[in-house]
Image (cartoon, rainbow, N blue to C red; front, side):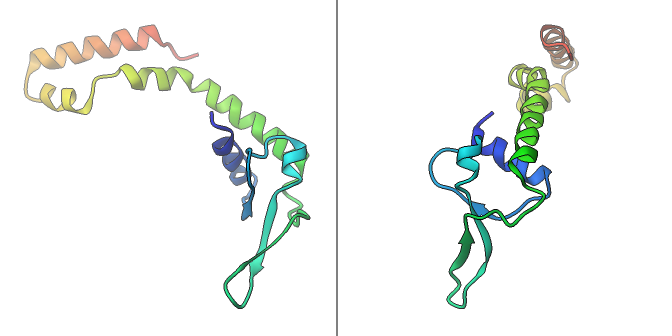
Length: 120
């Protein structure tokens, strides 16, 4: 999983917050400590940020665990992603609605994919 997506999901799983960062995704403590946390909006609509984390629910320790949890969840769904790539397309499924031979072929293809990529 892409580190940017993983970080965003981890932050959201912990309750969320507005932030900005530049460069690499903040998936290390060093990079996490460089995040610019949004604390408000100025009269001219400019975003007000600080590098001092104002969110007690988003400590590096909690974020680090959440990152691991997101990766574990992602890894556990590998079989589903693999299946998705090989399952019949929507077009094939639509055609199978009107043709029993096509439906049988679809059922066989899905069964083969499930056998190839079993649930853990």
